[in-house]
Length: 497
Image 1 (cartoon, rainbow, N blue to C red):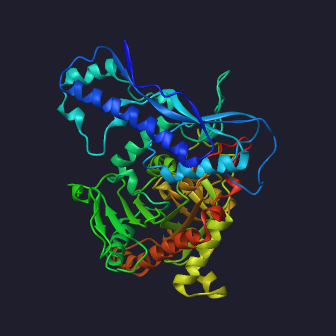
Image 2 (cartoon, rainbow, N blue to C red):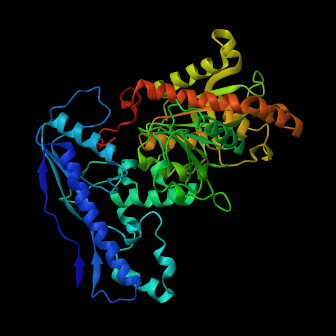
């Protein structure tokens, strides 16, 4: 016997707020059903069969090939048919869902259909933020959970839609979004684990770095901004969900639950909040393309408006000096972590909106223009490798050497993360960019010595961070409609941003 939650039949809506209210009703009913059953299960009660609750869905029918405004990068389906997606966490995605619903109704003049799907909600994804129910279960009781509740099913949460490889089974509807509800829930849980902060704190503009020095400066700046009673940022959040509200603002229920962790998580995140969620999140991804892929795989489900890599790199040209900036306009992908998801023959283009913002930010912060600006910043190709010690490969000077490949590609800098972050931005339709700072020149015998490194960090980290923040503010001020690019959309693209 299966004890399903209340099934709510599909209903049609021509108002985005009413459609969202129905999504909330279905989701809240399903989650309440799972949580109640789980409480009885933890108490040792027999539930009399399998307990199941399902996600809400939204569906749209179109019968015309007529295209809406061809300047749009999202908010429309690509042709006649039935399109559908499951939805989760309407409390977290309220504004996002409202915007997607509004655009579908506006661009197609049709109705939205909302109802209960056939996709089960895994019981793990029903836990409230501070629930730790499984810790109270015996091993035998935990093993029994599989018989009583639905557990995460990886077959329902792969990235085939985003990768452009998904083929709907016969009779199935076309996808409306890049991610199914289970895939979103999975990433929300992974974000807690990797970053030490709740998904609710993440902002729409994300900075990545590969050095703790940048985080230290971001933390200092965040606390400084919280003392500005007239500032635009309303709170600063650190790992463990430790919240500092801007001076003059009251605490919010739940702030008291934050506590600094005994040790930092693998990729700690820090959030400079604005009331409209268009503030800045910064994540220390550490070193390597695997971390870069992991964190962007999960942050992508939050549908940020842009992410940018700020970090250090090896300068490959004799004309570069330590402390110079590199603005990437192309990437050589020797990181390999995305080879199966995004073939190497796929170009990763520079996005004009991001490039202009970054160049303008460098000029604003350094107060340099024209030739003087070109003296400290060079635009060119960045190569990313998965071999931190590429300099030690025993093939220098021959045709297979890394130097030969980098020279042929016209690369001007080398790191381990930038190409991965840009490629995943392309893959997940998140506007991306890279601004690096030259910290050594191993091909030319210039490596960081302790004294040089300390001086370099003091000189450049603050300026580099301020440039990244300024670039984000410029893009935010230009508006999301200006930022999202048709270059990131495929032939048969999903409607959701």
